[in-house]
Length: 399
Image 1 (cartoon, rainbow, N blue to C red):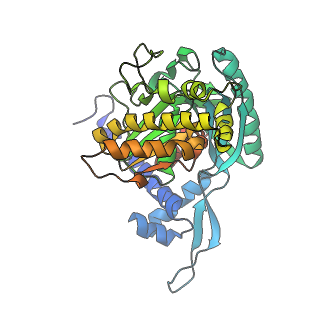
Image 2: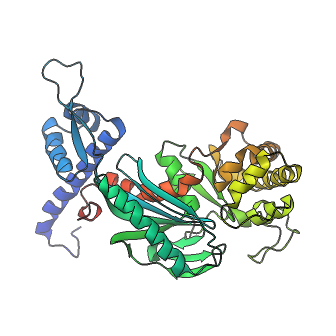
């Protein structure tokens, strides 16, 4: 049926352009997954003709996405073709993070390698959002300048925040541990398109894009506790985009009052404040988790007991999630990854006791290899994934 907003004579060229963009993505995806490889290898992988691949490679090289490395080894008779790889310069992604106790920024290249980064400890609780964003912008300026000296050109930015996000409206709906509510972000930062995402979601995507499992419950915790659910490699966002509020799952319905208005929520037993109170520690606001880990490593009995209680509460809450959605894995990420040695025993014990109607093994629960870097890396990789999935979109390649 003809489109109501396009003349019938325009359908052919538009379709051809769409097909070419799909083929560009096929070739670029093959290079990203299998580099170094020759044009002939790319043709074999994608199913395109060698002539088509050669034409597409010329375009990808022109846009700074692919480079030639020299002759590619092959078992074929005749002159070997040049090996293709992702360009180490050109378009890049900028990741930003506002945490309760830190600010961070990084730039990644097309291969996902971090090429410039900075992180500072700072207490952002109840701090004016304008001041937080101004300091983050300054941090980003330094990281972008460093990346540009290496020949990289950031073309998009994504901000990770610990709270509920309406990404379509570029708005932080509620980030209670920051004191933010209905905060609409600017559409650009340093001249780059700016988006915002929940930090747990970005941590889960970073794990996925680095080769993680497709069906995962990813926990990201610090002052608050959030989770992301991957189903078949796609984020489950819920009807309004607010899925994953693990911190407000009731562990003991008759327990202490929570800031959300309910009682006995997970955060009242495993959130940063609850753990510090149980441990009897009064630590400086910035980067309390690292300090807590040092006390635990020193073997302080009260600290170890507090972390044991937190791990038990986390396992209790996660058992419900595991029974409900049947993930292949549960991953502990965010700042709490630094506490894995002390949290995992209680988590494993509760999961083993409460997940009884389906197969479960201790190996299915692990600590993220990315740790607290996950959300920031995921934020930077958002732009890279968009480029890899649609390299023909001019807006993604920058000026």
